[in-house]
Every structure is written in C-alpha cells, then in structure tokens.
Length: 143
Image (cartoon, rainbow, N blue to C red; front, side):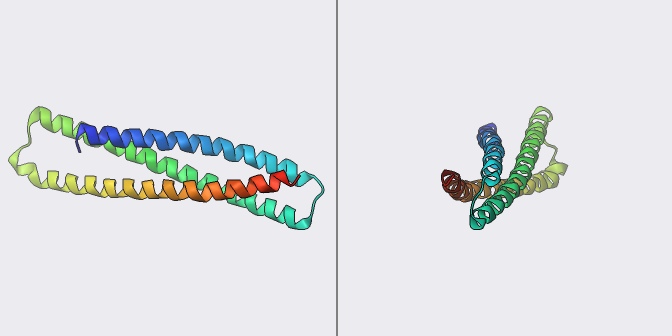
C-alpha cells in the first residue's frame, strides 16, 4: 500500500466521517421535530407513521455508529501498515521474511475489500436515508 493510496483512503474516510457526523446531528434534530409533531392532536395513522419513522431513525443511528467504528478500524489498520512499510524500508526486507510479507499483502487486500464494502454501505445509506428524510418532511408539513 503506497503513500498515495493510503492518502486517498484517509481522505475518503475523513469525508465519510464528516457525513456521518452531519447525519447524526440531523437525525437528532428530526427526532425532536417528530416528537413535537406527535404531541399535537392528529390522526392515529399519522402517529403510527411518526412512531415507525422514529424507529427507523434509531436504527439509522445504530448503523452510523457501527459504520464509524468500521472507519476507525480501517484508519488504524492503514496507520499500522504504513508504519510497517516504513520500518521495512528503513531496515531492508530479509529474504527469510518474504512469506510473512506475502501474508501482509493478503491482509491489505482483504482490508481494501472491506473498504469497498464500506463504500457501498455509505452509498446505500445515502439513498435510504434521503428517502426516509423526505417522508419525515411530508409528515412534518402536515402539521
């Protein structure tokens, strides 16, 4: 894993972390608005939707917490791998350790695959959350 690729991954992680922070704040705000909307008199059907949307928001918060943890783990892994690469460059790689380096490359490949999975999770979440947010805005506007 070269410096350029690790920098690219780090920037992507920073962007995702920023998005996650925004979404978490927005979810907290939406939950407050839904709570206020639910206190008003209204149809039973509307109150049921509000309850359902609150549950979805709670689920999304848990998902975002897990996603944040995954990103932190990736960042730690990248940092450790870059340190190993730096140290091996500083001292040279002994011939008898080529097997362990091959194993390290396999670990890097697996982590990059995990990174791609995380990228897909973020992309799917954006779509799913946007739909939910739009439904919540419709409920709020009924007030």
